[in-house]
Length: 158
Ligand SMILES: CC(C)(COP(=O)(O)OP(=O)(O)OC[C@H]1O[C@@H](n2cnc3c(N)ncnc32)[C@H](O)[C@@H]1OP(=O)(O)O)[C@@H](O)C(=O)NCCC(=O)NCCS
Image 1 (cartoon, rainbow, N blue to C red):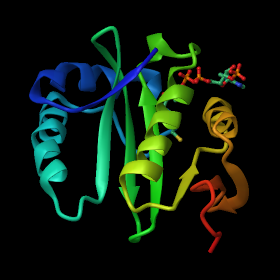
Image 2 (image 1 turned 90 degrees about the horizontal axis):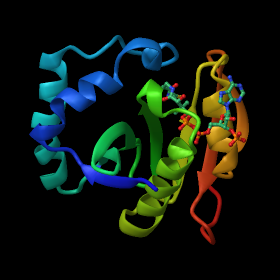
Image 3 (image 1 turned 180 degrees about the vertical axis):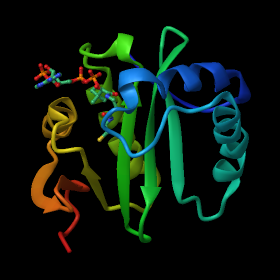
Image 4 (image 1 turned 135 degrees about the horizontal axis):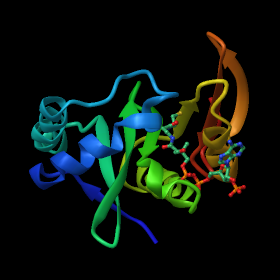
């Protein structure tokens, strides 16, 4: 069972471990340096205080071990994109599926967001599965990357 947590400075080393090795293979960034990981956690309180808040970056914790990150970033007032990454040694246990479900619940109950989009590298079959298991609808490809969307339950589609 996972918990989603706001990031604090105590998560710096864990974050650097998450963004390393094969975990960054299919995402559009390199491994995090320690300095970059520090900058991510140092900026977290400013995002929490922002009014209106337009991004959420939750650590994914299992028994107090920070094993991943799930992010939600508003693209418009009502639409946001989701992304996620897990440390390699925690893959295959359903944690990403749970984290995405948790972030969707947060998006649709605690923010004004009514639709969420996602995309993944064309070879990233595990990520596709995580989206399918969370009932995202496949919408086609953009720049060769499969794109998906999901609407808030009972909200009217644009
Ligand atoms: C993609 C990622 C988040 C999945 O995390 P995870 O915790 O292992 O995901 P889950 O255990 O919740 O579910 C993974 C699903 O993919 C399936 N899967 C895993 N590897 C697979 C593969 N190579 N081919 C097909 N399916 C695969 C699993 O069987 C599981 O589906 P199932 O429950 O139907 O069996 C993780 O691999 C990761 O962090 N990768 C690096 C970063 C990344 O790619 N992020 C996504 C960017 S879009």
